[in-house]
Length: 301
Image (cartoon, rainbow, N blue to C red; front, side):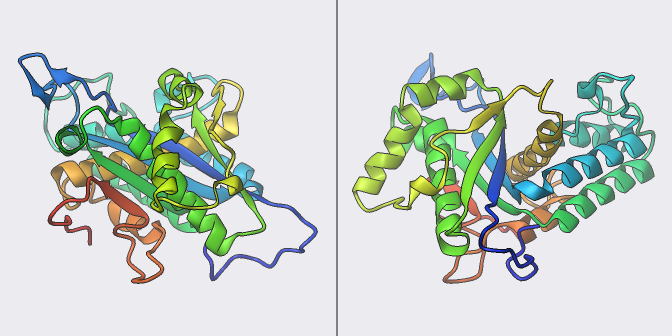
């Protein structure tokens, strides 16, 4: 839907808005280990990932309805079932994969409607088809929390993730959609909302921009995400599921390798949708951000 080569012509008088649906994987907590305050606590995730899937506002309804059809066909979604029972989540796909391959798993954590590997393959193929047909523009930011804890003590993983995500999206709008605006859309997140109110998240972005880094025209984006009530914004909650899948797949990739079981089904498609670096044409470092930047970039192909 946002392919630069396939984007349909649009009359100048018709305003359009780009919606960037965001979700996370891992936890952004940066607490120190009580036994050793020089290192990150052991009971938190090593990585925090924040991802965005961008579409035109005119694509919102058809994409949401297409996602709903996939869930009805493969997971038994319907008006008679609670929505969260069939919510598309990367973690649940991964747990279902382990179960159909013979591992013992929590029966409440996977998709009971999927009984074997062929059914799971069919669902994942449908998800890949959704992404390929929608052709969104994708950004995903992976924060190496242990490296951040050592290199920049006291800095918030959440703030760095948002700083990079905002910059990448603002640059995309500035380069390719200068007459359009952008809005980030997310499920209600109390901690995220508080951090924006306290200016914790914009502080990093603005300080770096003042030094000449992470500089972009942030006026093209709404100053903070639009947090939805998923019980009311039923189209948007469907599309946010795609951001969850991107975030989880990225998390699995940076943590376990992009060819690992949790990443390999969706990552090739996700990588093909990532915004490329305009200088190299490569998404590594532009659509995919890893911070602090690793000495050796992981194999993502």
